Structure formats: C-alpha cells, structure tokens
Image 1 (cartoon, one colour):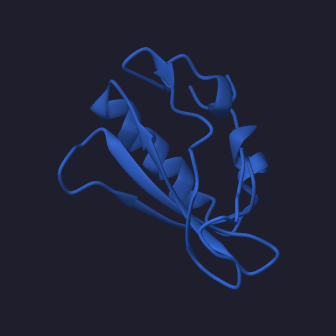
Image 2: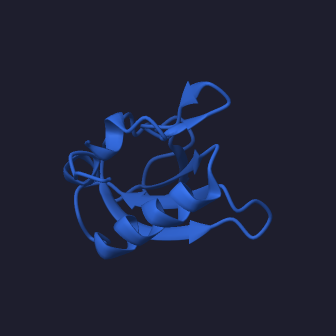
Length: 102
C-alpha cells in the first residue's frame, strides 16, 4: 500500500498525510505556502516528547523551507515510517508518498 494511503497513516481518526506545512525560512514569508506533497525532503526528526510523532523539513524550488508533522496512533508504525523517510532524504515528497510500505 502506498505511504499516502496506508491505513495506519492516521492519528485520532484523521489522516496524517499530507502534513500541513508551515513556513520557516527563505525568500517568502509566513504567507508563503507549500501545500500537499510539495518540495524535497530535507530532514526527518522523531519527537523527543512523543514516540508517535515525526517532524519533517522540506525545501521548495523557490528557496523556501517548511516544516510539517506526522502523528500516528501506533509507535511501531511511526518508527517504520521514520526509516523509510530517512532512506529517501533528498527525494521529492510526492515520490515518497507513492512508495509501498507494508
């Protein structure tokens, strides 16, 4: 099943994918927007507070950077997703969303 459609890509009854992106730096401003599966994955960081949350950083072609969060109902699945994301740093987010994950 594709990462974007995986049945465990859910937290509190809502899909975690795609993340809501928040601008953090670049030539844009807080009104700049990355929507959906935009950008290239630059960084993946598990939460130090909650084992079921992952923070992502992406870069866009216009030089802006955004952060987003994925939360899961299952810590084990979150660790599997972290491994997949680490293996695909530098890849386009849309391509990562299409990856098969068991």
